[in-house]
Length: 72
Image (cartoon, rainbow, N blue to C red; front, side):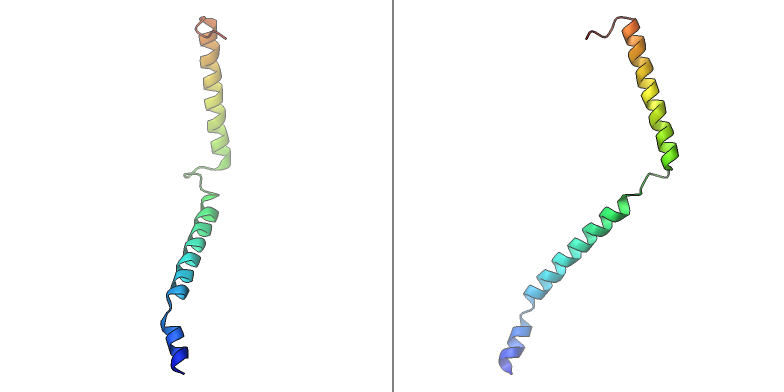
């Protein structure tokens, strides 16, 4: 009987396993919760912003090319 109580008194392995399991659960929750996080914008609004940025960059490149600033 005393031998069984001593085995359960050393709970370091159980506590280590619980800590590792807790970290794994926290990582999984953070991964799944961040997939749909868009800083308050919908997918359509983000696509519109990306299109505006791309068109602005293309216009800057076109104007720089017409002025002879870009050498390939």
